[in-house]
Image (cartoon, rainbow, N blue to C red; front, side, top):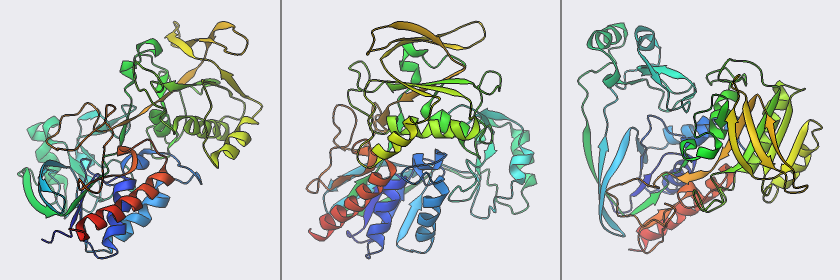
Length: 415
């Protein structure tokens, strides 16, 4: 293996972009992704900026490019165990967890039909359950089922194996270790939603009809738990009064000190989701500053013209629920100074964007700042890309991936 090879840690939009850009000018690239699929957070969205496309729109083009380029090799359900050496000459150890479903899988779904045990779905952010034999979403790549062997009984496992007409279920699959040599490393480890459990004043994730912005994306998605129908989790009722709480954990010295960049735009997008489904619903956005950088300002102006949308400048102090599980929001209007308690059917918290490596112990000798973002540079051989570097939207994430590819190439070529 040549030291012109590049390791990309993370198979989200930034990582895929970096890998393809490098491979298409002749570099061997390895993508290592912890999930069973490539696509990262974008795959979990209903729509994304700037065109409000479904995620399959952009991702399926990238997946075709991966399929058509033999220089791109990817490993899902995989972790980088260690990286040693120096820029231009790294030794990498990768650990690949067993999937228990091999390459013979055609995604026919017979294994899922044979399964009975259900557990909380990670892909749906806990808004639904999945079976122990599952695929995460309709355009999953690679399109291959996963078997959650740990949560299945032996009899259930045997039933699942017997149900597969292609002999794709391998109950003896084991963990594997792979050694690689690469010249540079792109860290595209992405982001995770800031935990609602930490926001105790906003319900701490325990209120039935208070959801995060990413949970709301799944509720709005046609492939989500409600087939795209936005309803109250507690009773499935259509919400008539909905509130969005901005900076839920962001710009707060007790949580995330920085602006998470995407939250205001996401909430304005969510207003559009609601309006498409419920023309008469009343919507309120509580905000500190409504930030829509650059060309998104026009999107804000159009959305703000909605006569049933109220924009209230004020910090939400707390959320509780009444006996009917309606969220009650305590807020002080910063313009008129009036403090009030407002009752809603559904509240959406614009939870912050936290780097995936924040608070996580890894064997990687990658420099992080105090918030968990990767500190990269050409000289170190570690190149930060996408939301591993800073909060970004999808368009800027792709641009960051292209930039990272160029820097990674320069690092390998320059040694």
